[in-house]
Amino acid sequence: MQKQNATNEIGVVGLGLMGCSIITALLMSGNKVIALAPLPDDMKNAPNKIMHYLEDAYGNGFSTYTPAQNLERLVYTEDYAELANCDITMECVSENLEIKKKVYANIEKFISPKSILTTNTSALPITLLKDFVQYPNRFIGMHWAEPAFTTKFLEIVCSSATDITIAEYLYELASGWGKEPTLVRKDIRGFITNRIMYAMYREAFFLVENGYATIEDVDRTCRNDGGHWMPFCGLFRYMDITGLQAYYSVMKDLFPTLNNQAHVPTLIEGIAKQGGNGIVNGKGFYSYTPEEAAEWEKAYEEFSFDISRLSAKFPIDMVEKRLLEKAAVNFVNNNGKIE
Ligand SMILES: NC(=O)c1ccc[n+]([C@@H]2O[C@H](COP(=O)([O-])OP(=O)(O)OC[C@H]3O[C@@H](n4cnc5c(N)ncnc54)[C@H](O)[C@@H]3O)[C@@H](O)[C@H]2O)c1
Image 1 (tube, protein in one colour):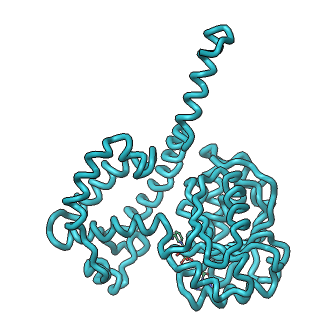
Image 2 (cartoon, rainbow, N blue to C red):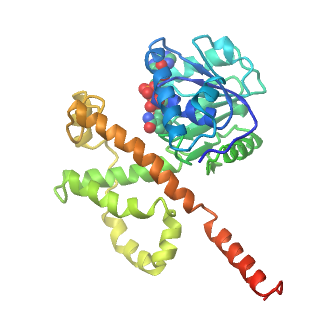
């Protein structure tokens, strides 16, 4: 659940899938947001989408502010000059070097050299992008996940030139927004999450392309094994809980057999080259009628709220909290004597 926080003025440049979701998260945390549409087309969908997210978040008890209260702190614009007073500006445009470079030049014409500039890139190295900005010390990766207003995920990624105090400031700020941020102190392509996820994707393609399992069975395995425990704890904690010694002996024999191909799998290449874009156009690893696509989208929205509620019951410091509660009960039961 989002916490309220002192108001910052934050610019979000790019009102696509992630931009709209990030804007929703920032509004729910009490910030003023300047939502900048770099292409006029963004304005066709973004206001309705953000309104829908705000209503959904409020209806599900995730926002203490009503949609109307949140909208009072939102300004839509196509004019980069409106970013002039932003404490932080978040770039959220397509994953394309040339587009990002052009957008940074537009942003830096107006923002103060003392303000922070972040990128939501999924996998472009921050150290590469920093060469496109005027003040690399205040440039940093702030990598959100979809839906940004329900998940606690947020990766803060330094380039080789980022001022670490900016990273630490954003870490604290994001914690105040109800996130459980992670700090990547040394830049690496894919950061934490995409390095782990893409290792899984590569193995999934290997199993399917080589006839070991179907797409359906790989998906079913992910849902019911990793999907069951990952919202509870991370990989390392899970190995501790379920038997570190066993993992040690399995790794010796299994690691040499895992796929480590460097090329893009033929299966996704074939679909992508024919224009397949999953539920967006009904053509992906599965095919979808428009009704099925809409229903998948809706179900995922519902699931995101439910899984966030469930993981809020098991916070990262759950064991410390439980032990403190137990100690407090014992203290009362022992009439104030410490055991
Ligand atoms: N989609 C995800 O789940 C996800 C998750 C994490 C990070 N990201 C990253 O967030 C960023 C945005 O991704 P998205 O999924 O919101 O993309 P999107 O396609 O939904 O939106 C792209 C945005 O880029 C802008 N844009 C496109 N061409 C442009 C141009 N020539 N000049 C200026 N602006 C232009 C569009 O106006 C739009 O606002 C990318 O860097 C992506 O890698 C995406």
